[in-house]
Image (tube, rainbow over all chains, first blue to last red; front, side, top):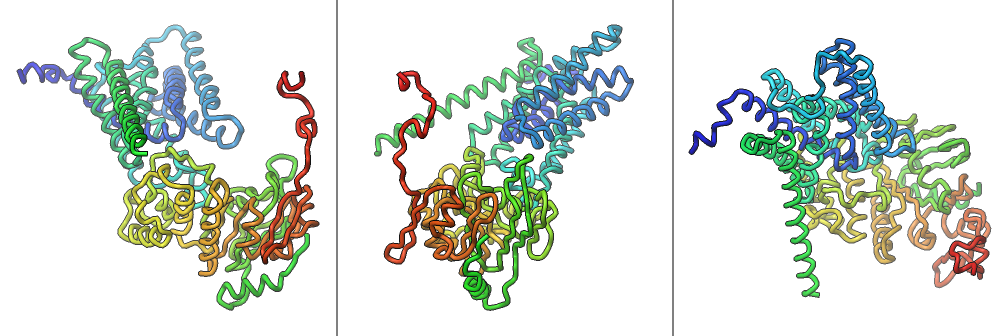
Length: 282
Length: 293
């Protein structure tokens, strides 16, 4: 029985993929809290598209993928932040313009230089089972970096996310905090892109965070719950995908969406019950 | 600009700061500011002394919030200089200033408790660890108890009454022990009794030596509780004690409206003189088809 249950783990590709899925799930869950609370849920979707453009440019220019795509994603994130801060343009519109233009650069380059030796399918749709030990180390490194920085800048990030204008009055260097967060987000998206793909990253960023938000009114507990949901759905999703024979990234996201639906139903029923109770007491 | 009762205010300032010499904590010299080509504020000269309690009054769009943001260092003047405690701001955040924003600007669905919001005020003072230190907790407990919201520390900010919410943001401003407290419309959006309580609380803080600058639309409350008022409409129209400044001529100029000032039982009451508008005075063009018909 135990041998059957542990069967998938005898394969190295599955072990690598599972470790990567757990780390990426937790990482996206953690960063997603700040994204959702800033009302920038669309940024994950947009920036991953922008990074795709950066990845194609890196390939054409023969740059290192992580450096080229990372720099591209960081610049796009900073541009979005600055456009929102300095103009009347809202976050959704700024993300739409900057990231779609960046994605279009990638598409234009692919159509111009048709003789590509590299397939960009993995970048678009993810390839968890093709994760190498080097990829796992890269994901682990970024996860540790992001966790450590969020840990030590927890208060500054919380205040800036809650009310950036007032945080600045209280001496928080909000410009610097925003730039640092853009860098972390770009790094997280790049390591997640190989695993989940451009098309699924947005869901992995948003779903654990909104599920956690439904479960608690405490910021600390939301951060913890979102990270755990991301990591656990990464683990269970990978495991399920082996048996149901469905793409791993899609299984993880579908599992997260199912959990969100369940939590939404339970919390709605609880709310309705407490309102009914209050009504009968009044 | 008319300056009325300066001697009285200086005396009050000296009294409030414990009898020492009057020191200008906030100084604005020839300050002009605009978001675009048209200036929102013009040639503002304002001095606020240590221990003073002042209210900025004026109609919507008069530049009250912009003036507060200039003093806080969130905005930079296009001309002129702002000094806080003798130091020029030059676009930096003002040091030792506690700020209470308008309650309407707060995201009430944000997942934070009362304690977390109040401790945000100590972000600059506290260390790198994410959790509050023993000293943070001690200061927090004392402050919340003194504002009579000690039992609400772990409650979500949405689950509070208007008065309690105002106290939470006041606590956030006070926890860093500021020299100057700046409040943007602390009596807006709360009922009359809560507004009265908030102003009593501010008067109490002022008696303990806190310098306070607030904006308000409630002229009657300002007349009753605030010893110094500044009438603003793009420029300073007048400043002084409410009984000296709140007269028909000054208020008409400030509000560009027909104002009525009544003295009743030692109270000063201000009201805009009612007009009998017809529908076409207010809305020259019909909005709904059936109204025109």
